[in-house]
Structures are given as C-alpha cells and as structure tokens.
Amino acid sequence: MGSPVYRRVRSLLACNLAFRTAGNNNGIKSWLKPAFISKQRLSLPSQSTILARSYCQHTAQKGLIFRQMFEPISSTYTYLLADCETREAVLIDPVLEEVERDAKLVKELGLRLMYAANTHCHADHITGTGLLKKVVPGCRSIISKDSGAKADITIQEGDCIKFGRFHLEARATPGHTDGCMTFVLNDHSLAFTGDTLLIRGCGRTDFQQGSATTLYKSVHEKIFTLPEWCIVYPAHDYKGMTMSTVDEERRLNPRLTKSMEEFVIIMSNLNLPKPTQIDTAVPANLVCGIQGD
Ligand SMILES: N[C@@H](CCC(=O)N[C@@H](CSS)C(=O)NCC(=O)O)C(=O)O
Ligand SMILES: [Fe+2]
Image (cartoon, rainbow, N blue to C red; front, side):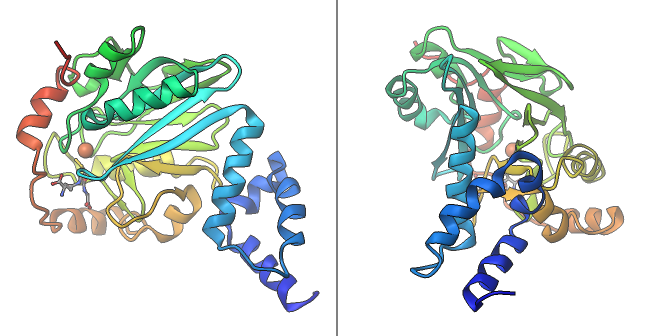
C-alpha cells in the first residue's frame, strides 16, 4: 500500500522490534508516527536514530532522566537514572576514573544521588562507588549479597532500588559471577543486564565462580521473559553498540539462541585473555572500590 517511501517507512517500523508491540500498549507508535512521516520525503533517518530519538522522547514523557555514559579503557557503560520531579537519582556501574564526570553531571542536572549500584563485582575496572560516596554526600553503595562484596546496602532477588516515582527491580542473574544482578525499570521498558547479557554476546564464565549453564538459565528465565520491546543496556560493549532489545537478543544473539549444550561448548572455547586490571580490580571491588582519603 502507498508510495515506495511509505513502504520503506512501514518496513522500518515493522522491523523495529521495540516499536512493534510497545506501540500498541503504551503509545510509542502514536507519538512517533506524525513527526516521522512528515519528514519522510526529505531524508529517512536510520532505524537506530529513530529508536534513540524516540526513546529520549519516551523517557522524557515518563518524567525519567536517563543518560548512558562510556569509559573507554574498560569499555564500560555507566547509567544515570533520575526522576525529573523529585530529582532523586541512581547511578549504575560507575567507574573510578570517571567519578568526576559523573558527579559533575549529577550536580549540573540538580539531582540528588541516592545510590551508586553495581550489577556485580567487576573484574576489569575498579568501581567508582567508593569514591562517589566521598564526593557526593548522602550517596549509598549497593551490590548483591551473593557477590560477597561490601556495600552500604546488599540486595537480593526481588529487592527494589527506589528513586522518586520509579524503581529498579533486582533480578538475580548469576552465571558470569555468583552475584550478578539485572536491574529492571518498574514498567519493564529498560533492563540493565551488567555482564550477564551483552549485545549479541554474554559475559564470560571462566572466572569468579562463572558457570555457563547457570548463565544460560539466568538469561532465558530472567531476561528473555521480559517484554520483547524491553530495551537492554549492558555493562560493556566492545564493538561500538549501545543498546539492544529483548526481542533482538532472543532472535539474534549468536550464543544464547543455541541449545544449552551448544552454549556450554561455545563458552568453554572462548579463550579470552584475562582482563588486564583483574588483579587490582577484584580485591578493590570486594570493598566497594577506593574510598578516598
Ligand atoms: N579486554 C578487556 C576484558 C574483556 C572481557 O573479558 N570482558 C568480560 C566482561 S568484563 S568482566 C567479558 O565477559 N567478555 C565476554 C566477551 O565475550 O568478550 C580487559 O582487558 O579489560
Ligand atoms: Fe564482569
């Protein structure tokens, strides 16, 4: 139906999995379509541009402040979430070397940083949580009880990290490490998967109590059961990608679309070198990172 341009628009929307179902449920399609169609004859934005733009609008409409930040040495993503009304905020997976950047942004945006939470005891970088507590008074560190690491608050499956009108639900997703958690936004639109699920990949399982069968079950039971339009944000990406969706990873993840038996063989043949900072990072992260003087 319609012009070639309209058909292109339709096919872009059709293959954009985040929109396919979300649109019917929460109005994404209704606010996406008018702006998009009106520009169609000038130039067609790429699918990822549409998703990024639309997602910003989506979060803004919900009253959620959301930032993804990158630390290039360990290729780590740190996430800032805040309620734009109450200004309460949470940081996920801050990195020591970027504490100044994160604290500056929190200040610039007029936010009250309540928590700095780690998805797990990282092996490749020192967490910024310890130092953040020093430079942002009132901020409390969070990690899972099963990680064996120290923090102000230790959490378990089902616990919630509340910031303003929002909360992150903690889902235990062990496998990369014993204490890995995935943090899911209360409306299930976003999931912060740490190293459990990476974009088209997953965390390695060859150290820190790693187990391929446990990771496989965690992903299938706790992440792939989220709505297909849920956007997944990992702790790392090594190929320049920023986000994915549950649907994309269910269909396209080259490791996790396999049977558990095939997955175990893949994971035992990764032959990855040890993270360069592992010997300093793990002991520091077991005590919530560098605490400052
Ligand atoms: N080269 C990096 C470490 C890369 C690495 O091992 N990444 C981990 C996540 S950090 S614990 C991983 O699970 N990778 C899975 C994969 O398939 O790449 C460094 O030296 O820091
Ligand atoms: Fe890790």
